[in-house]
Image (tube, rainbow, N blue to C red):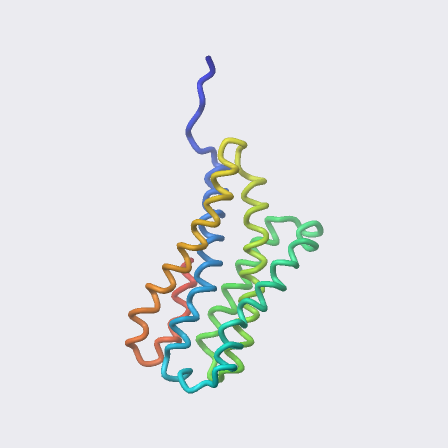
Length: 176
């Protein structure tokens, strides 16, 4: 009878970290818009402009999720993951510095490119790192943490709806 080692190896721990972090990052980038559009600065936008604002991240996510298909083969999954996380971080931070709706939409779309690249790279890179025993669990965990990120961003929105210019605290999602 063989004994099964139930401890995580270092590469398994890294795969677990990537699965949780990648999922939370993607989820928060999708869900945080509810708090932004509720701010008094954006309440007066026309319904079509609110739709463009809300969907701007999705436009970037579509582009970003296609890029790793080609770039991961050239640069590798690890550099692609690091670049995507850095890109999403920078443009998410820049959103809170924007003074115009157009600037916010552009920054949100650019941040979406990083989030989309993370959503495409994370499962492949996590599966590449994880042991056979953990691979399926970690890839499945990405979906769970994505929805957890959406829920968490909605909770983050609540207190900032009571703060003047609370939408500028959008960068709080950078923690993830």
